[in-house]
Image 1 (tube, one colour):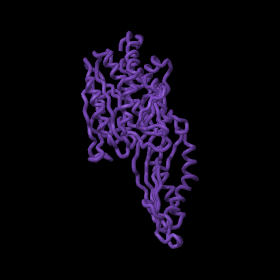
Image 2 (cartoon, helix red, strand yellow):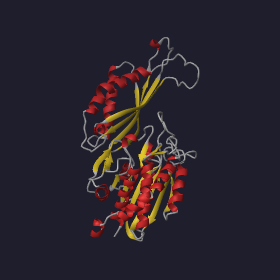
Image 3 (cartoon, one colour):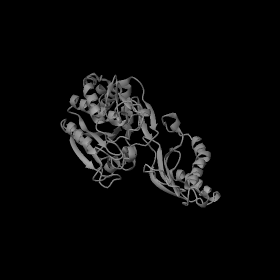
Image 4 (cartoon, helix red, strand yellow):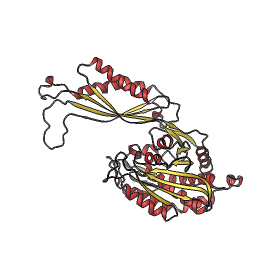
Length: 429
C-alpha cells in the first residue's frame, strides 16, 4: 500500500456506494423474499441461482457447491452453496466475504410480513434482514463498487453465500473448508458480515456444547402412579439440580474475552426443549399413562477459560450424584455437537485493516468484541486453518431471531464503505 493511498480521500468510491443505495435496498429485499428457512433448508438453490445471475453478470466466476452427505442434506432439501470469484489484473492476495443465506423460523409476534422486505423509513423489515442478508447485500455492493472504481486491482475478490450456519454450518462453510475453499493458499483474508454493528470488529466467539439427556421410568395407569415410575419427575430433579448447582456456578465465571452483550461474559446454558410422555398428536384426550421417558436438549455456551471436557464432566457429575441419591434414577446422555472457542489476534492483517477503515470512514476507533454464539469462523479456523478471519457487518445483534427483525439502510451503506475501503487497502498496489 502506498503513502498516497493511505492519505487519499475515499470520496470517489464512497460516491459510488451512495449511488447504489436503491440497488442495495432492492437487493436486500430480493434476498429476504426468498424464504430460506432452516430447518428444513428451503429454497437454498433458489437463492444461489439468484446470486449467480447477479454476480456472473458482473464478471464473477461462480461455482455452486452441494454439500452432499452433510447433516440435513437430502434430495428434498439439498444443501447448496455459492462461491463467486473475480480475479484482478495482477497477482495478489484474495479477500473473501462469507455470508450464510439460511434464516431461522419466523416465530410469533410479527406485525409485518416476515418475508415481505418492507421498507419503512431507514429500516427494511423481514426474517434474515439483520442476520444476515443485509450483511450479504452490503458486501456485494461494496465489492461491486470497488471493482468498478479499481478494475486494475491486484489479487482476487470472493463472495460466498453458504448454507446451514443457523444449525452449525456443516452443510455450508464446514463442507467448503473440507474441500479446500478456505485454504490459506487460495484465500488470505476473510470477513464475515454478521450483525455486530458497523463500528465493531468481532474477533471470535464462545464455545458450545450441545447434549441430549434422557430419564427413564415405568409406564402404569395414571390413576395409580405409585405402580409406575414417572420419568418427567426424574427430569424435574435434573432441572432442580441445574437451578441449585450448575446455574450459580456458571454465573460466577467471567471471561476475559470481549463478549457482548455483558451477560454473555459469563458461562450460560439454555434448555432448548423438553419432551415427555405420550405425544398428543390428535384431537381427543390423552391416555391415562405414567410417562416412562423424558428428554431434554441443552445448549451450553462456554468460555476460553473453560474446556469442553470440563463442561461435559460437570453435567455428568451432576447426573451421577442424582443417581446415587434418587431411587430408580436412570439416565442417558448423548453429545449432539461441540464447538471450541475461536479468537483472532488483534494484530492480524484483516483486523488492523478493517480497524483503519472504520477510523477513516466512520471517524471513530473500532470496538473489539466477541460473539456470544458461534458462527462460521469456527470452521474457517479449525478446518480451513485460516486464522486471518473476523466478523464485521451491519445490524443490531440483539435483533437476530426476534420478531419484526430489521436492518438499517444507513448502517448497510456505512458498512459497505468500510468494506470497500478495506478492499482498497488490501488489494491496491
